[in-house]
Image 1 (cartoon, rainbow, N blue to C red):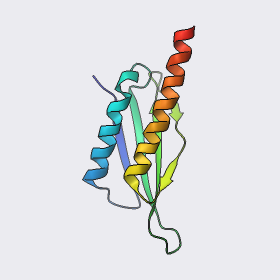
Image 2 (cartoon, helix red, strand yellow):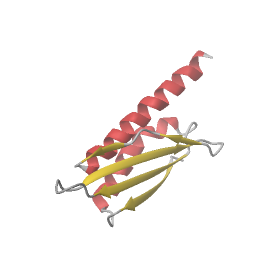
Image 3 (cartoon, rainbow, N blue to C red):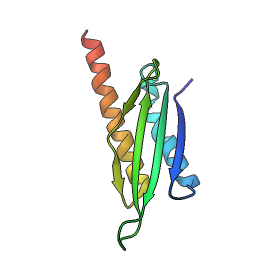
Length: 104
């Protein structure tokens, strides 16, 4: 069935390549769909002083009980790299939770 994902772009209109990157990264979490059937991804373009764009990526995982599991923000000048970073952190968090569940 897979994990559902809602993406919101803040401060810019978004891009198909970012949506494709987010979809590719989401595939990594499918093995945890019993823990997180849905997620919300926010990609915000910030405009710091004359240094170009900075992207702040926030990923919130949604549990079957509709509880929010926020993942630490990832930021950088490359939105795709920040998306990968957010999903790296989510995968680590979910692996930890799954390992705890196997021990009990």
